Length: 153
Image 1: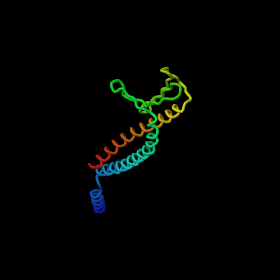
Image 2 (image 1 turned 120 degrees about the vertical axis):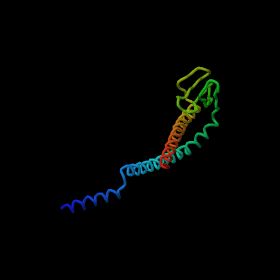
Image 3 (image 1 turned 30 degrees about the horizontal axis):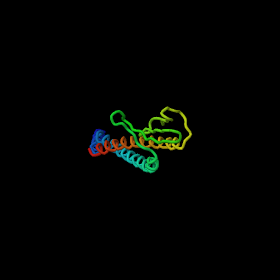
Image 4 (image 1 turned 120 degrees about the horizontal axis):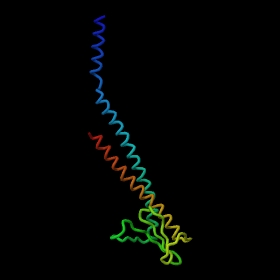
């Protein structure tokens, strides 16, 4: 009986010596999780870039219809400005974040039925989408760098 118990203890000790330690196992699991996260972030970045590549030709086709205005001293954002019929002036912020601004003969108006307004609405949507994609691309690029550094350790 004692021999069987000793043999059992020796075999358990031998098996324990050949197994990776808990720290090594956690490190390997973390490496796998980081590899998966890196792959996901790289896929996301590829998707965001492809979406941006689809939007930019549309933006580029609209921009010649507008003139860019920005007072560097006082404004953080500039405006794309188009003029329409009857003294209409339509303004779209360069990041697309605010609603379009419309003026007729210097007075702010809420509605106007004009081709310039339709173009401005389209430009605003595109600019907001481009701005959002640029933010996502920056954040995703930082995440990729973070996971690459972790995996190098």
